[in-house]
Amino acid sequence: MAAGSAAYDSDLLRGNTDSLLLSLISEHRQIYGYRLIKEIEARSRGYFRFKEGTVYPALRKLENEGLVRGEWSKLPNGQERQYYTITKEGKGLLEKKLAMWQSFSCAMKLVLKRTEG
Image (cartoon, rainbow, N blue to C red):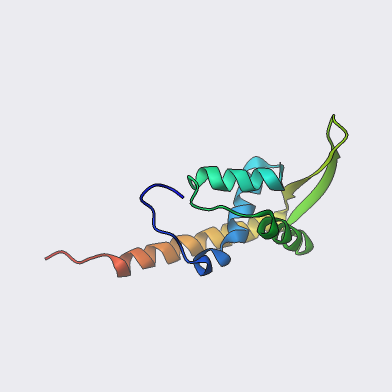
């Protein structure tokens, strides 16, 4: 966890896991599950530490909903890896979720802001 950061309640993250995954998949155009886990951990400076048991079921759900597409690829060493890309529907949902998050975050800051005086 990032130095000086308070731990978070998992309920705060539960509704936002899809947004994090869709955002990174969109940005990278094509990415595999383990790399998503490491990218989230690195970008959050260790604050978010997703486990495979969280990410892979979420990716399957996104795929079943038509928001991402998974495609298997064979690596030079013969190992297979599933790469994910975002669909048009996924991009549309991501835009909506980001707009909702911005509004929610702004409203929270307004309410929690200490008044001067």
